[in-house]
Structures are given as C-alpha cells and as structure tokens.
Image (tube, rainbow, N blue to C red; front, side):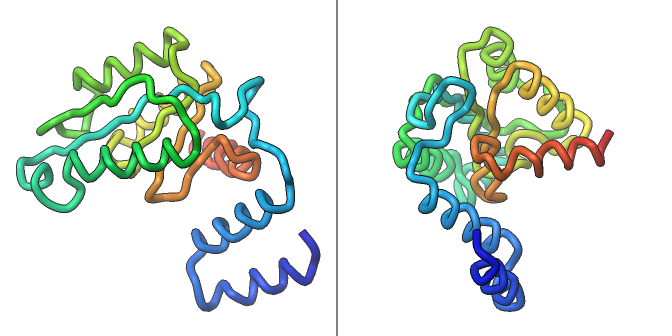
Length: 174
C-alpha cells in the first residue's frame, strides 16, 4: 500500500472506527492482490466450516440475535465466501460461561477429528463468555490449523493480515 493510501486511511480514523479502517485495508489488499486467499493448501472456496450459534435465554431466541437471524447471517456469509458448511451447531438456552454444552462438544470433536478447516460465529460471546475457555479453544484451533471467523468483530484468521494480529493477541494474553 502506498504512503498516500496509508495517509488517507489514517486521516479517516477520526471519522470512522478502527474496525472500518481494518476493513478498508483488507478490501484494498484483496483488490490489489488478484488471487484467492489461501489457508494451508486450501483456497477460501474449499474451506469446510462449522457454524456455531447460541442463545442463553428464551427472549434472545425470539428477539435481537435470534437463532434464526444468526443462522441466516452466517449462511449468507459462507455462501458469499464460497465455504462449504459441514454442520450448523445450535445451542438453545445454554450459558456461554462454560463448555458443558452438547453442540460445543460436537464442535470440539469436529476440530479434533480434522473434519473442518474453520469455525464461524456471529459474535465472540456466542462461542464463549469465559476468557479461559476461549483461550483454550483458540489454542486448540491453532494446533489443528483450523481458522476462526467472528462476523461482528471483523475477526478472520483466513486473512493474511489478521494472522499477525491474532498471534500478537495470544502473546499478550499468555
């Protein structure tokens, strides 16, 4: 990226949030590099993913981030990116404060068995509300070379620029 583009992006920081700047950089990078993002030996369109969806209350199930809304948004995202969906794992009325959830355990089994290349969630807190549990899952994902995508936070380890951010985050946490 040229210095003019970088100055333009930094100048825009006053007008828009950091996540929008990261998105702009990612879009600029993708339009500059005329090839597919590659994860290991798999192009983006070859990724096999599990979608993880959770609500902890009946009210959430009916309003806001309902199960149906989360599932629809995640499926549209996967269709756009060309991902193949292995499973849609849905937890109804389960707390994110621990990992004692049947669908979470199925997700962990798919990761361990090498059945998927990525996990896709709408928001980080849908997966876990425990920092320790989240850190343990991220460690497992890294060990198994499984990517992680959270739509709301614009967090996507399949993107080359996000890998160093992800690794820096874990360095700070450990």
